[in-house]
Length: 126
Image (cartoon, rainbow, N blue to C red; front, side, top):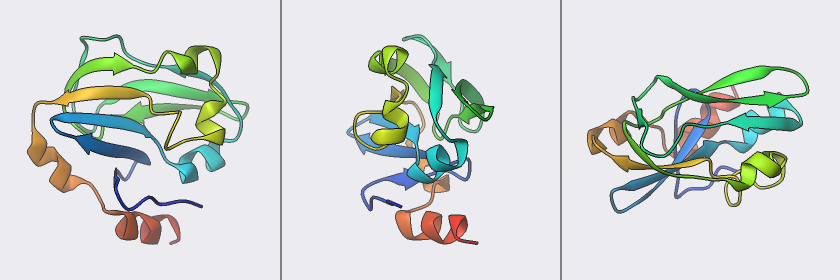
């Protein structure tokens, strides 16, 4: 299982990659492995404001539907449209091709609440 060192992680198993004032968000390899085969991803529209720790979308697998929780606060500036036609990318490429949304950060201090790779790895191995 991968835990890229350049990402930050939430307790709800979302990852964040910060580039300037933008945050790319997706779900972790651990999360997709627990969910099983992803068959549908519901994401917010561009322009939507998301709040840290609040739901912003959902993923549906053959096993269940799980809410996605915002790891940061900000405005959605991009949505990965590829996931509409190919939700299985979440299983095959959770950190590269299957980023879900890009958020313009409105509160960078929220990043301090997230875990680094080592802390996240320790949490999922408990």
